Image (cartoon, rainbow, N blue to C red; front, side, top):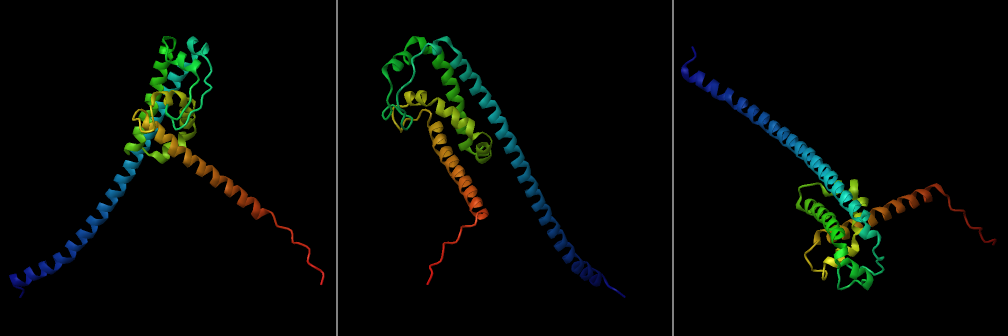
Length: 211
């Protein structure tokens, strides 16, 4: 007849596999939870990135449209200088343009340009803070953002005394890095195109020398 000790030993040996099974189940649940959390985080990051781009680019478009629609701008002299490194120390500005841009007639225009540049700087801060997905934002809107920065280059350079100037440093960094990315991607596409063409074209054999 089984004693209490026998029952205790039976329960002890039975608990071992049950505990092991419980640990295995817990591990799988933990992995599933981690994967689900990663998916949720990725989804939220994508939503944040798209929302940020839509909001900021809309603000930039509105501010730049207001600026370039002003009568004062339409009457302004053309910029004929040369921009280097987005700073005053390395760039040249034609005096007629400088007199207008630094005068009272350009105050309303400068205010709108400042709004647009502030939004561009905010985009750079979002991208480099890790809050948004930089690669996704690059794929979605790099052409628009680089285009805006290029169109504002004389105003950015006018605000920056030298290359170390902190104002709009995010914009300058963004333009430098994304321009290199775009150049790399375009070169890669051209290389792939040339490679595909070479694969489809057989090189004619040269005439052999008659011995």
